[in-house]
Image (cartoon, rainbow, N blue to C red; front, side, top):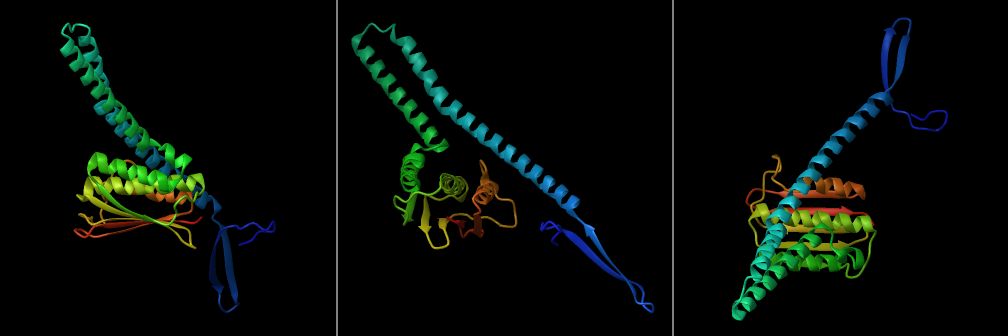
Amino acid sequence: MKTVDNKIQPFTASYQCIDDEAQIYAFTLQDISPQIERQEKMYQRQMLRKTIAAQENERKRISRELHDSVVQEMLNVDVELRLLKYQQDMAQLIEKSEHIELLMSNLINDIRDLSVELRPSSLDDLGLEAAFKSYFKQLEYNYGLNVVYQSNIQTIRFDSEIETVVYRVVQEAIFNALKYAGVYEVEVTIQQTEEGLIAEIIDRGKGFDPNLKPQGTGLGLYGMNERAELVKGTVNIETHIGKGTIITLEVPV
């Protein structure tokens, strides 16, 4: 209902007969703004708790990655460098030096991979197309996952927030497929249409029961929907046990 100052005010209306013979009726309007405000605050608190929990899970995962790869490699390099000063034989000295070079190379690769996973510079500098191609090469090299990629966006740039959302949703969908679907190939299609930007991720793996809470990591399926809502987008998930999963993101541009 519109108020005198042309604002929309939520009301509930009730109508009842007081005296039918005398034709007395009551029509009541009740302002439900306080209830709606309470519901909105409750929803916001729930979303905040879920977001904080998801962020903490992501921090834990990054911490494990750093400890299991980067820190271990650095410790190995430290030990090898300490032993190097005790080498008297030139052949052994060269061999140890080459081994340290290999450890440093592995360390650099681990840091680069983690950096790309956190925030690829190509996404900011060159856009979605370049960022995806780089990410898919990394997936094939590190995990043996083949990504069949098709798109019509090429060098087109979009709003930075939209590019971030599309990249993260695709990344999360692929990561879940890699970890839970039991597949070595994923299909990714990015299309710009009259309606907006559409990203489709298909795996032909295990699938899951959509009525049950699926497994997930990081921000998971909840995070996909939350990210999409930030740019007025939607995420649709089609899945059946044994028949794979199709995740479709639609974002207006």
